[in-house]
Length: 374
Image (cartoon, rainbow, N blue to C red; front, side, top):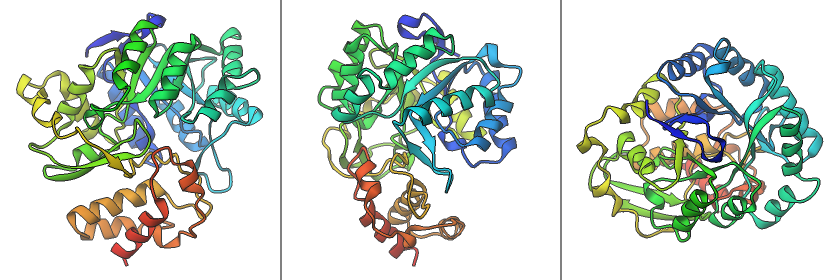
């Protein structure tokens, strides 16, 4: 394992760490196996934004006996809808504090190492977070009380992320970075601002929500760093986890990457970057495919939730994309039919599109997916 300094915190973190989004709703034994294998391989930074009680209980069990070996990252502003159990973003102070204290209890700890100001992209939301009485002030209180050590900021747009970095109030920035976004306007300046202010850059979405790993050939990639541009490219070579992660690790200011891994195979594929040959890590041949962008692709992040009829929008869109690009296979039909609520149940209320940080036309996507699987 390679270790890097986590910005001004001075902490040493594994260069490849673990995002846990894709472990939600997985079997208990699978979740525990992935977490403990990661720890055994030297991973020591874990991003943990889901607030569902059952998931937190399983994760708390996975970290038992290992708390002193890892940095735990909670998100202030991430919650769940008690009615349908789906993720939701909140700015309600009482709910945020309740969810944070619940995190400490279920993870069997008296503090978190990093407390993220969760998922802020628009200027209005940013101003509210950072204003007196906002979540920044709450996070600072938790630091004074010893319940958190460092403060981070997570978002998907260059403008708000750069403001956070330059504010002097945060220690870490969690931001999407991948091959598809190499040409994003302002990205270079953002990365250099992180270095100048000693703000650790924690990279999410290194595979662009999995789209970079869909195989050789025509692939639609979204430049979601700017919130809604995309491009259809014809990859000159198969894009692998090693190439994706090598690209990110080569960028200025990167402290660690948090790829989402839902099983041991995906975890092993991510960690294999350290043993890969120079040829296997070389991303130069594929980088030129990501120079131009146009609006509109889902990255399956589920920031659009909660859905009033409980559709797992990211999962449905993922299945729709796979079916559209590779055909409606028996395996895809089986997985689609296993959904409790599917794309055909969309009531076209539009609330998902209002929440989406990437400008995705969710209603149209639901209609297209429903037609594919009809």
